[in-house]
Image (cartoon, rainbow, N blue to C red):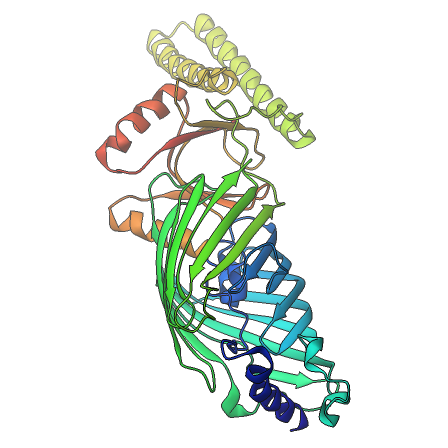
Amino acid sequence: MKFRFLALLLAGIAPGLFGQDAVELPPDLRSHNLLYTNPSIFNPAFSTDQVTPHQVGFWTRWQWQTPDTDPTTLLVNYVGRSRDFAYGGGFFQNNTSIYRQTGGLLHYAFDIPLGETSSITFGANLFGFMQELSDASLFLEEPISPFIDDRDQFILQLSPAIQLNIDQFGLAVFSDNLFDFNVTTSGAVTESNEKIIGGMLHYTFPLEGNDSNSPTFFRPMVYVKSIPTYDTQLGLNLIWSASRYWLQGGYNSFYGPSGGLGGKFFKRLNLGAIVEYATDNAPEGEELTYELVASLDLGPLDGRKKVVGFDVEEEEEPSAEEELAAAARLDSIQRAEAAQELALQRQRDSLDAVRRAAELAEARRVQDSIQQAEEARLAREEVVVPEEGERYQEVSEAGLEPGYYLIANVFGTKRYFDAFMADLRKQGIEPLSFYREANKYNYVYLRRYDSIEEARRARNSKFGGKYNGDLWIFRVR
């Protein structure tokens, strides 16, 4: 109770100390523009959609001020993702019109499948921070007595979210302070009627030219956020993500319209900036808010070999298992050749013309089988030179049958993978897939071929006119 009295008292005297233009900011983290980098701060359930398995993010915001001053909000965090869950942690500092909050956060989220194209995601951010008055000039030479013991507080605050995912549609409910506890005073920070509650709707439109390292999509989003003693915030966000850049725009009924853009560099680094134009809530002459965002992908990339426009990776030495498999294939061919020779010798020794003719026919069948096996072996050893502009990848992958796979798409997120497989089946196509442990991606392919010529014919004909999207060839040696 003493802590809430302090907040109310400060809110009452701050305009008198700073002038009539002083504006009290809402106590939330103001993360509504985090759409491409660090989206788990805005909605903790978003982290399970992260493409790369490891990512370090950075975010800073200058609320109604220029970037040559100290930022209002600063965040550095890490998020790791496995197939159905995500985890992370970081450091942050956030200034309101009354307090400066400095501390860390822990993050966890997990996804529970409900059906082939549906799931439910639970996520939460746990903040732990020291809270102190943001401006020491508030204190007079003879401070008001309630301030003496309550200047610094250590607070724990839980921000959970739950999201229903159906195909590309998402419906989420979240809270910035559903549970909080003041460790210093051993009591709750807010009452049950002082919780910040929000909800959002969004739909993701996958775009053609999808890249496993940098998915291309368009996502509109609407959200509402209820903050006690403040006007309810209504918002609209739009983000367009291409292979080398992203664009975003939005509107928040309290903070105003915003626009941003960012670039993707070296397949790992994302850098962007956002500008927000204030509504009448901002102090006069301070209408702009600036944000800088960045992220660095630390996980393995889906390296492309022998592709025009991509760096060529050095060929890995074959593993012991691969060498044993190659030896077994060669031994099998030699045994087949020996069997053929024995059959031919028996034919020469036979005086029965009918039997000899039958054995000769069988020998021809065996010869054809051996020839096919030899052709398949030569195809596996064939050196393929990519055509100009051709998208082609070549790896040595244990556990996969050698050949040329006609790839339709690659996914790092299981929900999008399931939705894409279901969509192909609706089109009358029976897709196949395999999972690469090396980069933790699911590869969707339409068919495997023994030769590059067959694979190219299928790709150029759009799989016999059955598939209209982009196709590329993935070779397993």
